[in-house]
Length: 206
Ligand SMILES: N[C@@H](CCC(=O)N[C@@H](CS)C(=O)NCC(=O)O)C(=O)O
Image (cartoon, rainbow, N blue to C red; front, side, top):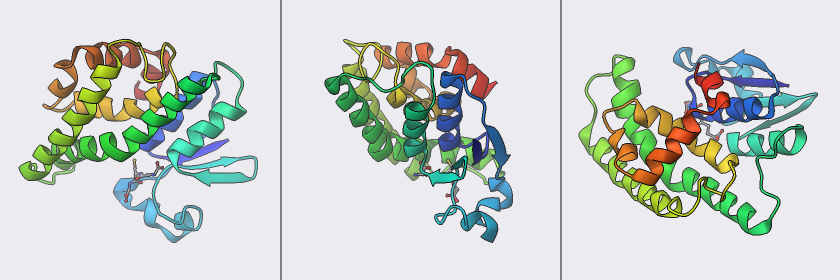
């Protein structure tokens, strides 16, 4: 298996975390976003949308991080990251969708403005974007906080792909001055402590 991506990329991290959870090593092919390698013709020939990650498995190729992690869980041996009972499966899919639709767009607005922009020498954060991002992030985390009052993980009592999909954004958020969005919500805070101390996450972020 080959994963084309960048170690700083949230979507690449979902794939690498899933591989680590399954105890499987894949070849990592660096696509340097800072050099625009994801827009180079030879990469776009693989991934028509010119983003990372891209995935290869013995001649089969695919893209879209959330689709890749489902594929990996279905294919690889090891602990299942997808519940077998229907209500928990439904919950997992709900939270994957909430991450994609509401949480990641708003948290990424904060992360881009307050983490990546200064790191790339891009100047001061645009506070309109940050504040809009904060509103969306707070709403999503309020909803998760309520759900986590009665269960340890998003799909229920067991860790699943849904938790993996939230982890990269929680990690970056916690490294910004807006990490209080996590720590001021008690159930989100303890959930993030459980997630961020998993060996798979330490491996990907090591
Ligand atoms: N829906 C895609 C999103 C991929 C995506 O936006 N990747 C980012 C890195 S996390 C990227 O390549 N950004 C570069 C760009 O948009 O030019 C997925 O889940 O794989």
